[in-house]
Image 1 (cartoon, rainbow, N blue to C red):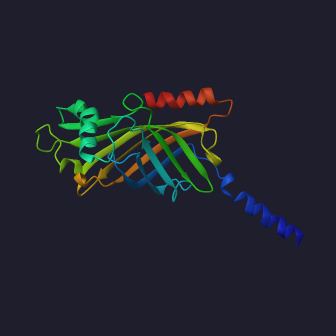
Image 2 (cartoon, rainbow, N blue to C red):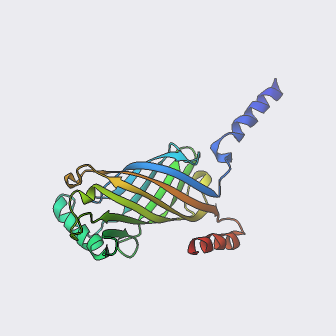
Image 3 (tube, rainbow, N blue to C red):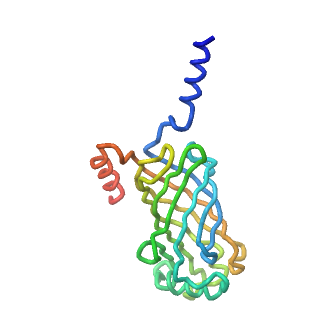
Length: 220
């Protein structure tokens, strides 16, 4: 009877998330909501499929809007965001605007996280790019053009993760889109996308060699 109980305890312990094998390559699909017009600016939602250690968990990307007009006046706020982030980045060759949100354009670098209760959270920083297409080629963002934006960016995973992800770092990227049937009501856009990460245990002595290989891969 004692040996049977011991086997049960061993199975229970080994099946807990703390003993789950951490993958070096992670892919997941996500969905959620977010809006540049609401302060603080947070895009967030759930991890819908992909890496089992993340599925069912949540994710977020926050953009520092320090210095932006208050969200109490949406039109003034949008005029500022348009002039500061989109209009300067008009591409006349493909007729689109790309708002770039990173450490050079916002008060602090956007923050990123993805995780699952009981397993832990991956954390890091991100660059966010939102692209609007100029469908009628007039170089002015129209309401129907804001209905759909392309979302893309890069992720740097830092060692401040929790749970099984503690000590892990790496690089990644994501892409997707935002959609809003009535974008000028300034309610949240719906967001969908996919992310890819390559991570490793940066607390190990081999960090210098392997982390260098990861960075070289992304540079290429």
